[in-house]
Amino acid sequence: MTLYISDADIELVRHSVDLLQVLQGRGVQCKSNGKYRYKACCPFHGEKTPSFMVDTAKQKFYCFGCGVGGDVFRFIEQYEGVGFLEAVADLAEENNISLEDEGFEKYVLLSLTRKARQEEESKMVFPGKGGGDGDSNLVAHEVGWPDYCVPIWDERIPSINKYAEARGFPPKLLSYLGVAGCLRGTYAGRLILPVFRDGKLVFWQARDALGRENVGKYLSPRGASSGNCVFNLERSATYDETIICEGWFSALRTGPDAVATFTCNLTETQVQLMKLAGVTRVCLCYDPDAWALKPHQLDRGFKEPPMQRALTRLVKSGFESVRVARLAGGDPDDLGGSTMREFIGDAKQVSSEIEVATLFL
Image 1 (tube, rainbow, N blue to C red):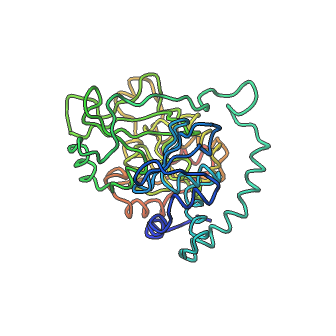
Image 2 (image 1 turned 120 degrees about the vertical axis):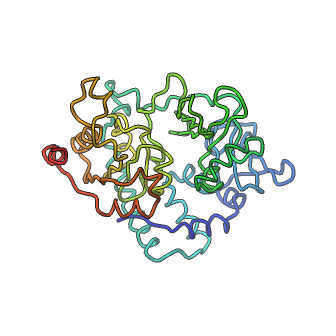
Image 3 (image 1 turned 90 degrees about the horizontal axis):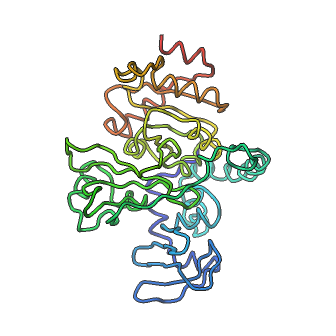
């Protein structure tokens, strides 16, 4: 079953819960450090000098020692070891906030099976998790932020903020995701989307926000590969089915159960990261042009289009369910959330390589 909590209920919990009270209720000793500010020893790593900072005006926390930060939901995710929606439901129950009956019923079912799933996963050996033959790409290798980064909605980057607003992305959403902008330098005029894993910044993608024709649409950190990470994986894994999109704008437009692989070239590392996160059911929603080979792909000797290669890889990886949606009229970012849900509802189930091949005859 899918754990569902409406956006309205998520916002209700967000604005009804006080971060400082949540911290103190879990034994975090916060001391005043100025107006609306508190400090404490970080609950996520051992330290004697407080580096864990709390801003009660913004309802955010950040540890300068280990780099973990976010809002009250992020704290519960890290502290309790649960997914995003579970954190929302936990806080709602703790504070006697009523959620939609269907969503809460599904939350209870998920809670009952969570321990059993964790016990089962602890017996399995995943690449990069124990053993000498692991894939080093599954280990979280930290990268640095671009120079001159500032948080999104900083008044010094008006053109970037205007671009995000024009695309219909709420300030709170992008702030929650840690999206930034650059004041100057190589990445000026770009939205910087960070990707975290195990509390580390493992990748970022800098998207041009000025519509320039003489620069690349996307830039990434030198030496880091998008094929070694999946955007929004931790949160999407709390849902019954994970929707796989190409770009992160498309994933955001589709919903909280969607991830982005950054290109249509799905890698084995990305598949293993999904399995490691507990994903069992997937629906592939790559852009329409992924169904056919492009001239440069033909020149390089590819015989199968990206969608076919990705579907084959998913089917061979042993997921409980693999579905594919054939989009029309644009990518998810163009189509919008409601239209995307219609395509996802009509997605076709595939269970073998032969069934995959018949889709491309």
